[in-house]
Amino acid sequence: MQLNPYEMLKKQIDDAARYIDIDPEYFDILKEPREILEVSLPVRLSDGSIKVFKGWRCHYNNALGPYKGGIRYHVQVNRDEVIALAGWMTIKCAVAQLPFGGGKGGINCSPADLSIDELEKLTRAYALGISRFIGTDYDVPAPDVNTNPQIMAWIADTYEKIKGCSQPSVITGKPVEVGGSLGRSKATAQGGVYVLTEALKALNFNNKDLSCAIEGYGNAGSYMHLLLEKMGIKVIAVSDTRGGIYNPKGLPANELKEYKMKNRTVANFPKGENITDRELLSSNADILIPAALEGMINETNVSDIKAKIILELANGPVTPQAEKTLSDNGVLIIPDVLANSGGVIVSYFEWVQGRSGEYWDESTVDKKLYNRITEAFREIWEIKGRKRIKMREAAYVTAIGRISQAMRIRGIWP
Image (cartoon, rainbow, N blue to C red; front, top):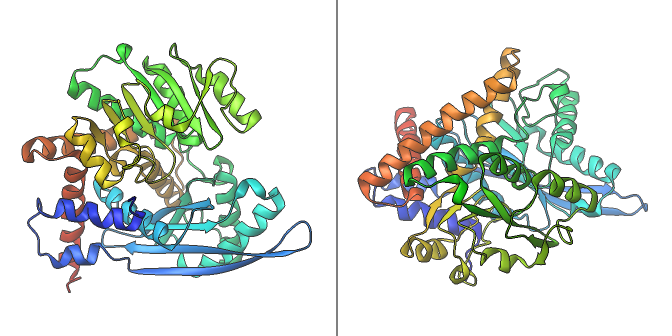
């Protein structure tokens, strides 16, 4: 049976606990969020009716610094999912040695069913509802699934109107024109490519002989396709919520991205054949990149996986039981808390630029991202080898060690 995301998080913490020599009470603390805000958001729709949406913002742990985490708009958003995502963000920030704790937010909605005006009304209502729960030195939101720079701009604008002053570092992932950072849109994928490159070097794999399948073709997935193509890795299959497409000779990244923008799906792309999501997961690709939602690789489909490497560009895409099966079969899983940390790393860079009034060019951002994420990879890879454990366990060993040390020094003790 598939675990819910919060149960997945707690299981992952438990799995790592045996490799960390700290007082067990810290694990109890790290398996519980500090606080959660739930808001009801009445919005008048274009037809004159009023619909009440539910939204959340979770503060998980701030031992290392202000809470940091994205805002997700999706019909599956719920309290437990938001808690799990905030917990994973706590681990992720510690892995990357960022001065942040973990937070997350979301609204249970279907953005595709809302007009632009309705989306703006909903966003501003949410921004108003969580305004007392965020702040430059307290909690810094960012984009996530189905949110984008425009939505971040609406939130920032609403927050600044409430506070009566400019605060460009209260939100990251904003448009460049209003204080966003160059390189932020591609950051999750770019960081994933840097991590994948390091893993391939460690495994002595040749890029030109490799193929890849990408599940999820939103911002991260589509950018990943473009970057992999530049690396010489052939992307043979991609999918989104409406279907998938396959071509053993490779799918052209720019053409497919333009097709998706026009048609809102990759299905029926003329340079490939339609496939289901399950067929994508069972394809003969060497690398599988889940870039959609949590729990997509689970006990029901894990036996279909043929890939040698799984790079988790989504949060929590592989359940713990499925991970055990895959690891027993020799599959290398590069965990989400490392693989997709490029997004929060460049969000940190945007936060720094906003606070200082500086502006970095894209090459500077890319270089800083490369240095930070490859350092994190090498540290985790060394721990993995020395302790003979999985990469996820090594990442949690690193992160929990840093968080518990910060809690001890601060005096956060049961």
